[in-house]
Amino acid sequence: MFIVEKSLNDTIENHTYYEGKEQLINTIQTRFDFFVNKSKVFIIEDYIENEWRDSFDLYYSKTLYSHCNSFVKRVHFISDDIDQVKGITEENYIGYIDLRPIPISQISRVRFKCTNKAFEEFSDDDIYCLSMDTSVNLPHISIKFNSFPIYAQDGMVAICAHADLLMISKYMYKKFNFNNYKLKDIIKNNNFLDTNGRKLPSEGLNILQMLSILSANNYNPIATHFKCAKYGNIDIIDYINSFLESALPVILAFNSHVILIIGHMHNGKRHYVIADDSTYHVTKSFKKTEAHVAIISEDDILKELKQTNVFVIAPTFDRFYFHYQYLKLIIEEYKNWTKKNLEKSDLKDKNTINIKTREILVESCKLKQFLHTCGDDSYESVMMPHYVWYVEGYINEVLESNLTHYFVVDASAHKRDRQYSLICNNKNVVVSFANNSMKNKKQLSRLKKI
Image (tube, rainbow, N blue to C red; front, side):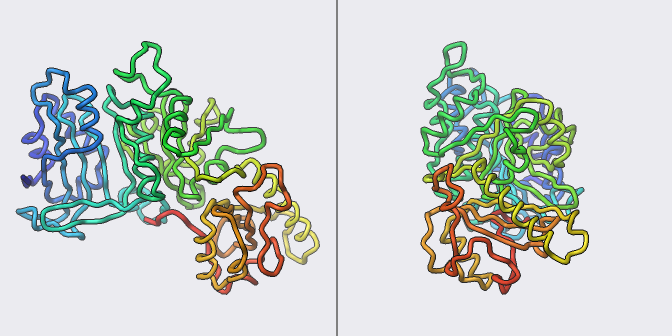
């Protein structure tokens, strides 16, 4: 049964059961300000949500909460003033949130259409974000849109690490057909019990527990410990970028909380899109308005990460062995080679030129298809492994107009190989000049522009 309400206040007052309704209204208004203000109508239905079903079976069915049952309240946000559910269209549908039938931590699953307009300060900028196809099935229509799967912890069954693992599961399943593990799987696969010897109530997950759960589900996780934003000579931002540009979500674990890096933007100074299930780091560490998704500047992120130890965790692909720290050595050789060539050139200000790169882990078949759209078939007949590193070289700024070179590296190569890991094109050339090879010069992007 679908019920139409004309305001957020009426939605919460009429369809939630516990005290503190005013606080819940304020929380939803603050965290989803753009979507609430854009909505003329809210449509409510009882819904069986997988995450809540697991939470209910594991814990909440054993409580005495009088209105607690196996259904969440799904609240659909609609931009047109309609009177019935049949008035919902692809165009006026904004997204939804699920509300748990419990007194606290009611917000559960969140899905909204990806849009830069949700970030008022950056509403005119290009934002690139991890996204997946989301489907909403209604009696008269099936709606599909791009979103990132946000999930908020309840504080008893799922804490921040559980929430991040669930977000990763939903995204990787939809994007790359990985195993779609559930909340109950996370709890059961947690073989390293907390200090109290029990899995519930949850005290969160440590690094080993997260890695164990990801490994058990064939997510091939990589965890790297950064001190003061450094791992040897590798900068944490460069390391994050290598995963993010490859369309892989990145967990940052620091100060007893975890967040996900899910997007970025270029607007003079680089900014990142983060997902925070509890909004703790958004509000406490980065001093931003309470939100599950926020844009944080690189400077603010580095300021925080340089003061502490950080674990960077990311899922990866099978048969991926040539990790970023080994690719970094090849990149340094490329930069030195480029600088020597510049010294021999007639370019002005050649001594102040800065060489920058983008590193993208990509399926070789998709790389060939991309290069073909650029009018470059120099790798068309070249045998490649399933995954390769595609490295773009730039002068001074990472802009399409500044793209000068690109080269391809075997992502399954031996970690100490600096020679045969480089893949030559059909002219036996390793480093290609973009202006010569590409008739239609473009940057490769695996993220969704919103």
